[in-house]
Length: 196
Ligand SMILES: [Zn+2]
Image 1 (cartoon, rainbow, N blue to C red):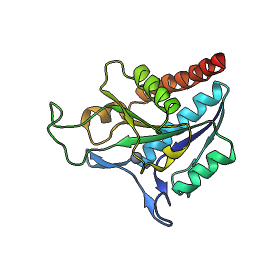
Image 2: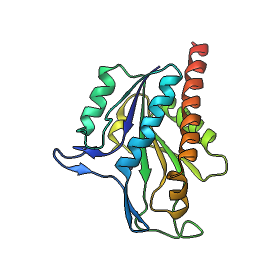
Image 3: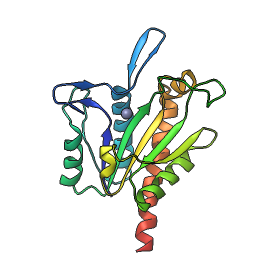
Image 4: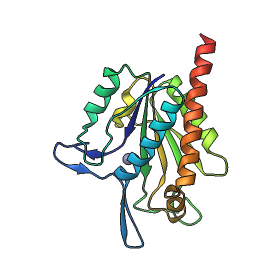
């Protein structure tokens, strides 16, 4: 399958000349930016999908690489991508009371407004979900990359939540999630081929 992996945020994301760090959190006096974490996870997913035989491209491969939102879908179209996977990390700057400790946490997959994307989002969530709080969410129309005909957006977890942060910065956990996601995408493709 031809797949475009999109590490969310970064240079020129929303406005030309402006670096968009995405969600930001402080842990132990160190500032952590979503755009950087996205790039790390996306690179791992790129490698895993490539190893599984897919043709994979990334919308950006470096921290300061220029990549506006529109450009991301142009890259996908240019390679005739059959799937777009955007990688993000969440934050909940105003903790509410919907969680026992007042903090939102967990893994989340958003999908474009069509059945194929929803089916893949559900499959990824189910596979990663073991023992974690997970959600499948239909995309809001303001999520630009999810306008692509077959697309999912993975929110790895909440970088401002202390529990999630431990997982998100544990290379073993990230590798595990990446390998599960790559497996789900690969078996999704096999299933689709069998059906046609
Ligand atoms: Zn984001």
